[in-house]
Length: 501
Image 1 (cartoon, rainbow, N blue to C red):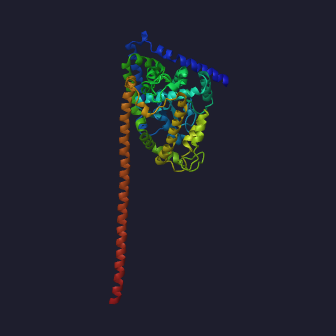
Image 2 (cartoon, rainbow, N blue to C red):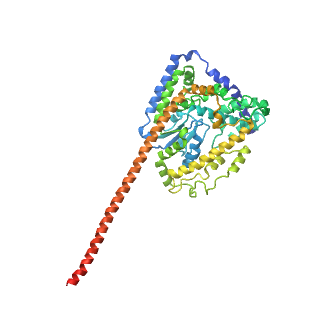
Image 3 (cartoon, one colour):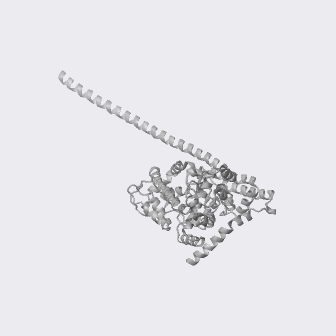
């Protein structure tokens, strides 16, 4: 195992060092990259994508199908949806994770849910007429900054080791021991970005050790002596390829992990001829229109509630279905056997953080589908408890590992220090994602209106039913009262007749 880990670490090191060269080379124009040639390639793909999407039946837009594919866009709040909501429902039906390369065949298992950082092209390998797609969208400015923060935190973890080689050996060893889940080193795009930033951190080690000369009052996104500044990150060739406009590319099915052979040529063409990106944006918009549910990170809690309501029929089915394990009655946390937060933190400090322990820590008792207790209300109550622990866990990881790059501290307040020129660069490089995010917000608003109308109709029906019930009760009560009065009057007449006789 140690030999394998060492070999794996060398590959990763070489990949990290050659990363910028590779992406710069891939962006170099050639005779085949003329506008007309590129337009033919991109337009042909867009036409075939429209044909593929037209095969999706209208009924798939209204009800949850047999298989749920969660198109997980990195840093959009998808981990909360996956860990705290989908795992509550499908804890024993989640498909095995295969490092986002999709070597699995869902027909060989009884799984019903797949959650990956892959792209929409994976749908071509699924029974698309029986598959529902769910995704979350986020404004690209917040998302790019969040990716920079997470990549820096993950890279800072490498500084717990004496050098890059030992850090990568440990990371590879940890990944090899995870049979049912993946670590960050395997997850796109962090499998590229983490090692890239770790190399930068080790290169600045001497300057960082002289950090006493650095003021506590710093802009954490622009400390060149300690870590790669955000501005350099935004302009880095791998980030240009992997991060900017990546939401549009994921929804369009054109990332580097795409199942489509022409995806690399299309990405190359839209880099050289940006106007061709409109074809990709158009495909992505049409796909969002046909996706079963689209949430937005800016309204995360409301998105989760709407998604829970959208699968209400599924909740009822899961509640009445026989369970393999008779778990104790579901409890959202006050009296349940949740893992001790301090124990979890100790595991993090020891740098031996297992995915099984993480999920048990987040959910406590994940088998909530017991008896007839599966409702939107208790699902959301469980979600709230889990999301709170997930945030606590992330905050602790951030504080714990950023100690290695003190005094860098990321926060919403610190984001206000980011230079306007950097913000404008991010917006410029993510023009497609900005337009797609606007479209996602419009879809989200339509979903809001649909659910408002749906549940106001339910309320009206309940009120109407209650009114009818009350009307019947009033009529029945009136009839009973009249009968009682008639009996009383009749009883009074009888004595008077006896007196007359």
